[in-house]
Length: 230
Length: 385
Image (cartoon, rainbow over all chains, first blue to last red; front, side, top):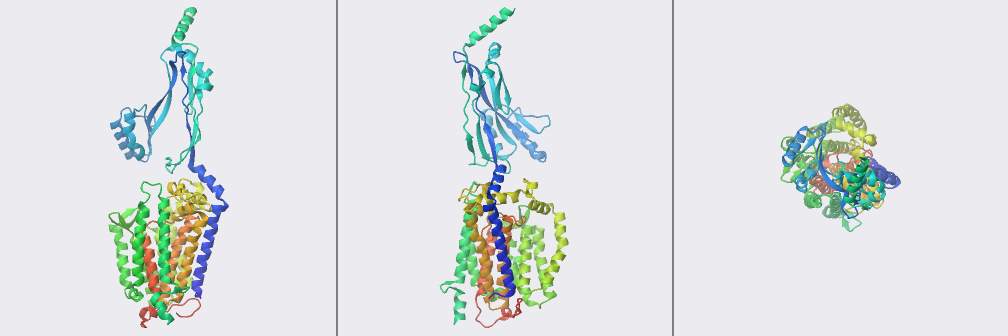
């Protein structure tokens, strides 16, 4: 048999083991759903994959309006890392030109990176949290003011286009498409965790809209209208 | 005849397996289980086998050291205790000048890619020295003061590292020796009260200690700061569920849980194997404590009883503090889980301690008891041993 003092210590350890077991049961079984939900809320983030807006083409198939993707460099500045920031900005400026700060000097941007410039910046993306390459869509139009009037224009909301005038507004439903939605887990530094990316909603590009007139006809129609006015 | 049998093969379990063999096998399996847990906690990294393979190599070294330590006659340990203690204490001081800083703590010697933590290796010899001091002095306040002095001398370099997790383990070692040796509860309580101002000073002067306590009490008040670690423990355990989230599929342990292969080893293991999978770990350590105390009771001298009981208590205490932190019963302390957490020094120290326990468990038939039999310690039963 164990001596009295030893028995007390053994009893303390056994009670401790029992307490640990109860606590473990609480997290792994009893309140599991609550903590899983809480954890997922903190970890998972959803994002939108913008659908490319459809083209507007004339009756001969010539594009009058289309969407083009660009890549911008964004460097966010961390105020408490002054020396590191200066070094980083200096190094990036040596490699690419046109890096400009915002008014508060909290962010540096360089728009429309070329593929070779993206390759040059590859190492900085993994090394520094604040360095990002952000894709950006831009709506492009054929360079005829007469056609612009008929084609109309778009505005942006949360990175997505919506038609506000002309054919862009009239054919909004066909042009728009369906944005994709993804889910991904982020680590403590808000970086994506490899292997956790999931597609929730499939993205569908907008359809092309074909107008009844050719570009030449649109231009001549416009000229006639102006002539009548005069 | 029976005594002779015990001395040669150790204590028989059910007449077939000898106790030393049982301990070797159990510790090896635990260590192997630890290697798998480490692999699981680092599987998403660039080198998923790096930590696990290193740990396995340390396990092999630890097994060899445990065997050697168990074959050395316990009398030799007793005879050379002061020298062994001094040999282990000097590196503990020198590490403050020659060591390298990792995670803000100057507690490692670096030999290429191998890091040795002297405060871990010294643990069994520190307990041995405490026992040596305890049996040499008569009971009462004098005995207690000597133990406290030894403790203070050993923890000074640890405070300067600073490694408060190891500090707690060293204090627990001293308390174990004093309690198992039959020391007075009143002295212990009085010393705890006397230490309260020092604890308050630490909390006041080390803001991160206070932040850890606040984060422990209300983790959601600062979820990305002081409460982060506690919250991640909760989410990781929840993900484990009853049966676990499969090997190699432990997202939380690999992505969110800080130090998932050392300070958070238990939580990371729970994510992999679930509630049912980690129950054997908890009760394995409880069984280890029970077996240790049974072994202590059967030892033939007071010194051996004291050492076996104290060393067993210290290892079990360390394991239970680690697990308690991981299940949210205590604030984070930075204490590793013996045999499971990554770290060669910790593994070797535990196995060395187990080896010396096995050495002490052997019955000495030489008849010359010396100090091994001189130390009279008694439990509350009052029977001298």
